[in-house]
Structures are given as C-alpha cells and as structure tokens.
Image (cartoon, rainbow, N blue to C red; front, side, top):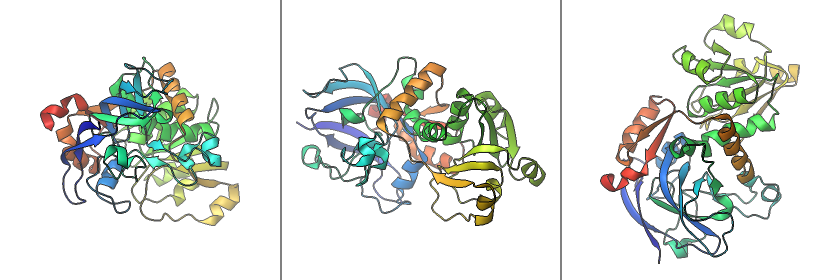
Length: 356
C-alpha cells in the first residue's frame, strides 16, 4: 500500500504554499523509507515554487536538504537499517550507466539526474505521483544508492542544509585542490557563502569574504575568514588585485563580475555557484592576460557528498540555522528575498501535524 504523506506544497506560481496530502511508494527491494525530521530551505526552492527557473508542475513539494531516520527498508537494502540517521540531497535517481554516473559524478548524469522534487518520477505508478516530491513532508522513499549516512557527531537539524549548501561549496574546493597555502575569496556571505568560508578555512586556506557592506564582518571572522573586503571600495579592490587562487561566487542575483575577475592571480579560477537568471558580462582580456578561468560547479556526487558529511563531522562544521515550523514557510520565503536569514532556514517536520 502507498504510504500516506503530509506536506506543504506550492499549488501555483503566484500562490503561497499550503498543506498537501499525497502518497509515497511502498519500499521496493532497493528502497529506504525515511521519517523526515528536518528539511533545509534552499533559495532554489523559492525559484522552483514560483516557476522562476522554468515552468513547474503543481502541486509541488519542495525540499532537497533532508535529514531523518530510517523507518523501513526493502529486501535488498544492505547499507542501512531501521533507526539509522540518514539524509537525502538534491538527487533521487540517475541513469547509473553513463560515464559521469560510472565515475561517481551522478550530478552530471548525461541523460540528466532525477531531482528530489519537480522531475518526472519513473516510479509514478507505484507512488501515484507524476513528479518527484521533496522534503517539506513527513516521509520519503528513496533508492538506497542516493541515501547518505549522517554521522552521530552532526545534529540532524544543522546537518540538513549540508546536503545542498555543504556539498555545493565542498565540491569546488576539492576540485580546485584547496589546502594549506591556498588563498580563497568568497563572494557573498549567505547560505552557500557561510559554508564555503567554514569549509575552506578547515582545509587550511586563507579566506577572504567579499561583501557589499561590513554588516556580516564579525560573522565572517567567527566562521574562519582572515580578511573582509567591501567590493564597493574601489581602492580596496585595486589593492587586492591578483591575490586569489580561487574565488567562490555564491551570489544568485544579477551582479557585476568583471572587476572581481581582476582579483584572481595567474591561473586563478572564479567558480560560479549562484543560480543567476540573466547573463553576466565577462571580458576576454583580463582572462587572457593571466590565464584566468570562469567555471561552474553543480552540487556533488553521492560518494563526494558522503565524504563531505564525514569531513564536517571530523571538523565540527555545521550550518548556522534558524528553525521554523512548516506553516512558517511562506514567511521564510519572504524573508529570504530580503536576505533576512542567518544563514539557513530549517523546517522542523515534527511540527507538521499541528500545521497541516
């Protein structure tokens, strides 16, 4: 029998999220059923709920920063047992056959990975849902390949956002070999940026935060940043030219990046993580002159995500969070648009019965 599930869902691009009931599939042989305890709120949830990144299908249950406890397992599950602390990030399926999947980079699956919410669900017949539905809910059923083990050292509420914000910043730091002696700049101290600072500092890098004001300077320093640069200060920007091996750009809004490219040293790279919806001008000469690069990075594969969780447990790294009840999600979205959160909202799903 399909599993009755309660949630909060977007029902239209221009309407608030509201209580929603639906069903999850009973566990197939490779499935894990999870009682969701917490779900982080990502800025991309807001974009998807409002069809800002393309037409969404409704009703839509957002949420891809899921932390909870195993409730049941299928007959072929070997990696998890009832009671285990687990998480689910941005993916719940992929082809498992292409070169990317074979390399453990499921996020770059050539046919395309199946997102935790909003994508066609190949198990629709079993669940009764034409699309995948996310973590703003009390249960989820996921193939064991895409389930992560959350170490005991990480509180579930503070671990939940690591499944997106953590891996999104960890992956480029690892790909560009950040370590002792590296000079890393982070543009924007928000949900992604604050994790980039913590992770880069733990890897041994000298970290500088770039922001439009000094409002978050104390926070940046507490998280491990050695320097804080106001990017509206032209003299300070000029003085910092050619300083950084890597710039992690976390800003989602349309913004100017040409001046920031000048901050890169020879062979330096700016990695774009923010989901901008408009083009950003980059001029060839500053790139040519110092063999600089502008690149992108998308979350991380399952293996790397587990590595990130273990790294965070070892180094005592968690997200800075504000916990909310499910029925506060619309207020949280409004506050996110005002950048009024430090630094990630996390929904306490134990409060769902009262809300729904």
